[in-house]
Image (cartoon, rainbow, N blue to C red; front, top):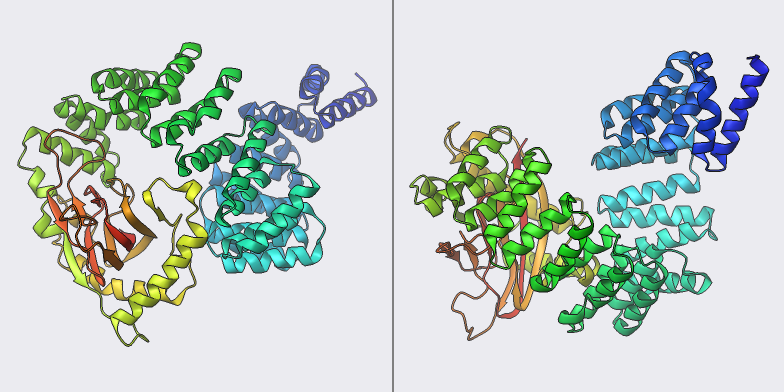
Length: 601
């Protein structure tokens, strides 16, 4: 074949790919590829075709060959990095993105990809650093927008608003920029201004499910709940496959008091779209959260009738059966999931609670100890090991759950620049209430009669948060100093000279409020600090609102709370993160607390 003929076919293939016809593009290019094994352009094109078709490993092979045959083309490095990122190989992808940027420093797409890759790998600090470098190099709309989005992910909402405003100055008419600016306003508590922009955009064109969701959320916060629900009803008709809209509509109806019928629209849509597994799973989750497990069961079973080996569906089937107090049947299903997943650790982990509830604590203990060989510090595994020993009557349980040794209370002193601790707590409470108002949206909550702030307060620039960390640090250091050097003890073995706060959030309960029992999987030590507490004068339960320890998240015979602690404003309670803990349902006007996790550095 003449070179001109091959070139013509390559161009024809590229044209078809540009028209979103990768199958046709491959059909033209494949026959001549054996003759173009060292042609970087053709290899690159075939790599792009395979990537578009979703054949990522083949795409990687072709793109690596393209790079090998053209070492100075930054675009080839970038496209190979995109494939590696999609395969979850973030470190390798980042090395290639860096090479691409060195070869093509003006390529904005490479800078964007670097930031996106860092976000995907949860390196938020690195992502912001690269986004700022992009702004410094090319202070355009896209750069400011990206910086704003990264800062939002870091919960740096004031900074995100500034970056959003810069993007808006450059491109005041672009819908995407106006929308991003509205989100930034929303996150700093300027909900009325945000709503005005959402409304203006929707009047022009309610063109995305994301706009509909944010408009509904803003309307709801501004007490326009009927309008919010109407927007969601219209949106789910327009985007019937958008599970987030269905979940928000169900939540809005549940908050209105229609808990029993909140998910009806999702259930109706499933009869029209039975193959939509994301919608089916969202519907099951909504019913599960509202305790309607009997209603969720036939929805799970209908899905499994069509896809009997769908592992996510089988997993929720096992959970629903367990919640219906049918743990033996639930365990049989979860065993099937584990077999399908080749006994993957995650599948075995999912069986632990059900094994214990089904009376097979010894088997649970054997599995959890095998899993802990690879993850010795995973706190949920430690919690399950302790729970199994408790059920079996093993005295070693008392070593792990030695409350006198491991649960300690500290009165936090007034931070610097605060005259009294009472003055500090009053200021801190005001800051946290604002966070609950602007960040803890009712649609996102699983806490009953209360709210929890999302993500972490650690990125907050509020002085009270930094002041609290400083005062809490004294107690944390004292707690750690009292731990012996013991490699066989799951708490003491992680003792180091350095540690860091790994997360911080706030919970606010109102009358009847309760938080589910939990452990903190990736923590080491957990602290809960009481900021404000206004209990009922004559509570029905003598320990209403108290912090409880030892009761797991699902009922197990005779596994009731073993230790309770009365909340006291200004008191910090520190304990190992694997200890089951929660709040007894609160009675009163407000129970405001801050929790955090500590890990060794």
